[in-house]
Length: 159
Length: 113
Image (cartoon, rainbow over all chains, first blue to last red; front, side, top):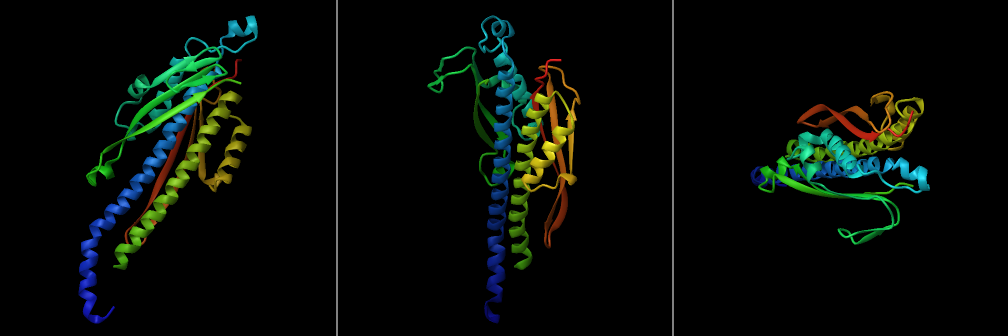
């Protein structure tokens, strides 16, 4: 840089500053979404695992086979809501509402066919699919959507 | 120019590092909650497991607070494991701050007493 173009460098820096700040804000927001998506996926996994942890005791005693209890889907919703509650401040809907709207299917016996995923399960299974709206305020400032939907699907079976 | 670019560059690096720790702590908390459900509550083996998992992902267990609630969980009831640590963010020429990372995972008690 020569002494003569020092002024133009300063001008360039000032002109580029909003762009640089926007890029950094976008990067930080993307990182935050990545973390929140992982937490949503973890919430779904913990929910379906909690649902398949329990068995129909009468059926187990009678035939020795694993069969999910009638409340397996309700259990999945309950634990999904409980885990989403931990990140409620970042969600655009109440955790209980997200859990209520989630597509939760229980397949108490196997084999079972899941029409939503076109999958045949060879064990009793609970499947949860949900769309979780996550607040992305930095995107909003950058004229991008202020709410980003994180889609999650979790499938668990007892062993 | 330097006082603008350096904080921005460090912002990307520091927040990336913070998010990496947040993700790692989240994974540890989820696994710890499952183990706590299997054990039926808080005990020394759970604490050892959490400390080993934190060390594996590069987090000093000595700086982390682990809370298990309730300490003894009933069958089919929720058990909550929280992992908390204070992390420092420093942006040269801009600011420095301590950020608390807090993650909580909830599993289901599996021990029929």
